[in-house]
Length: 478
Ligand code: P53
Image (cartoon, protein in one colour):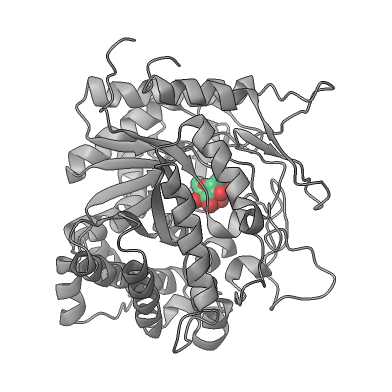
């Protein structure tokens, strides 16, 4: 076998989030999370957020793919593919059903003990996200989510509880999943899933967003510091949704526009890594007349709790222009975006850009000089089960192969320090953005449709065998 360009201990694996696959939404003493009150949408049709769990609505996360009772069978399949690690989250509401409970729920704690033991049995390293779009719904109702400073303490208490409990089973942690999604304040989904924030009529959304995000960043810093006290070997990272923004042209105004657009990503990374609020944000807040509350003590905490590595998701890139150009379309985050004429898009409109992954690895490494971990990447697509039962997902193999090639260039040619690669949704699960089952990412097919029909039977796709070989050869045979 040729010598691999990737480090020998490279963490190949797969990524999921509790709410998107566990199901068992009211089992084992679990409380209602924000994911439990979201209905199913589809491309172009947003998920609805209902006022609690209501009769007559379909909530796809309630059952999801029932990983809650089938995890042993599923982990066996991950082990068969040769996973070195498995990224999932701890459902906050299994541990603190209401978020503000005085004592944790033992049944929930036991569930993750068993889950981690099952992984460790196969030498699969758990990689754990503390908050992945699944805040206790009670924190939304009672406190307004992270618009309220009190949520810092609730999150710290939850994190401390699980970090102490699993200190000898889990080494890799991440605090808030895709914390920067909320920078797009046009989407109710982002603020709700990131922060449990429901915008009020007439309020300045952006100001509220920055306040909630800053409280989360403070909470994250507290947890990083505390985690290192609990176990000095812990590696605690942040998690950014890294969608790089390219200028449409070499017009200097386009370049400057893209630079400013990227601050919607950098603000979050900069605070996590440098432990300081960047000048461009302070200036922006002043210019906009935003009053963002934080204390000297908070600033000290931010400095003391900087992250050990950068976890990030990469699916696509975006293009912006300072001027209105032909073919541009409205965009919630930047006003307008331009379709990149040089790349194709997925059926859900996500622009497929493998070189953008190498680009992202480089800009992140140049800016922060910290180890990087690609904790999500993948193609959401409709799969067809053939008459003979096979699923020939060559388009998914193609997507992943192209991205892995670029990832390897970043390591081999650019010298980026990369910990691992965990493709998203290694087993089919409920889409976060749309609530669909049929936006599939998995190497393992799950028999369930958008309406919730199906046997939940698991089936290996063509990509299953392909990925197994990729891991076996440490990324050489792709
Ligand atoms: P779905 C937006 C942009 C990039 C990644 O997404 C995003 C989102 C939110 O939809 O989410 C991440 O399921 C997220 C996962 C999610 C995955 O990407 O909408 O961390 O929870 O499932 C894929 O196709």
